[in-house]
Amino acid sequence: MSSHILVNKIENLSSEKVDHPTAAVPARPRAWLAVLTLWQREVVRFLRQRNRIVGALGSPVVFWLLIGSGLGRSFQPPGSTVPISYLEYFFPGTLVMILLFTAIFSTISVIEDRREGFLQAVLVSPAPRWSIVMGKIMGGTTLAWMQGLLFCLLAPLSGIDLTLGRFAELVGIIFIISFGMTGLGFLVAWPMDSTQGFHAIMNLFLIPLWMLSGALFPAAGAPSIIRWIMLANPVTYAVSAVRSVFYDDMAAVAGGGLPGGAVSLVVSVLFALAMFAACVLLANRPGPGVQARGGGKHR
Image 1 (cartoon, rainbow, N blue to C red):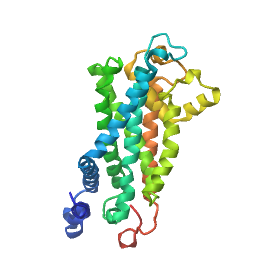
Image 2: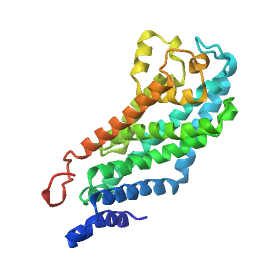
Image 3: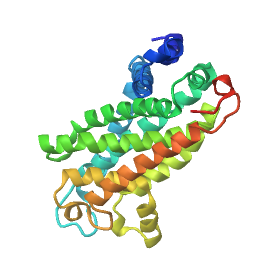
Image 4: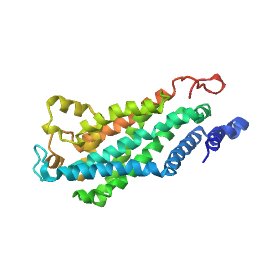
């Protein structure tokens, strides 16, 4: 689907309101049509680039197999009472890594759309700003969500008993985590005009965020300063939320020192909502080279 067709589709959302005021289409359905249009564009563009699919999912799988198999059963979390291989311990962390990197780097399309002129055309359309933000975030969320669920199918290889009920829980939890991480990426990408700068900034922060989340090592054996950093890290709650689905007693398997499943889920939901609210506020701020139609205020 070409960019010109999508822009015309969004701009025509309120054409009936302009030409026929008495038969105007309600604003809310028009806004959600804009969301669906931008959402579809993100997913279609990703599916047409097969190398992105292989790279986004293949690299973490290889990383998980090499690191997990290398350490094997020589790993035992402090405080755990159940034997666990590192391949099994590392699985939830690898899943969150897939979600984190896929979701955040999908928002690089914001910079590309601005450079191509598509974003400016969408911003001056009648579509409200929140719908544009929602469409972009939902696109990245869907990509991360799909790849995360595909990786979950490898859980039995690590020794995790993935039942149908647990998989159903993961469907919702993975979506929440993906939404929050995509919002974080959008927040960074929106004011930037360089994909190289975006990569540099995100690589600087993403690796420490992921490493200090309980994905690589448990908090129980870490120094106190590291444990405090881990508790302040939103990715920590994502890893704990995923890990709590796999085990009835997470502390017995992965050791203590990390928040429980219920707390982790609540924090993940609040983080996702906070990221979306921050993105909408940022998108409503006047930006260079982008003016609202007719000189009016941003929607």
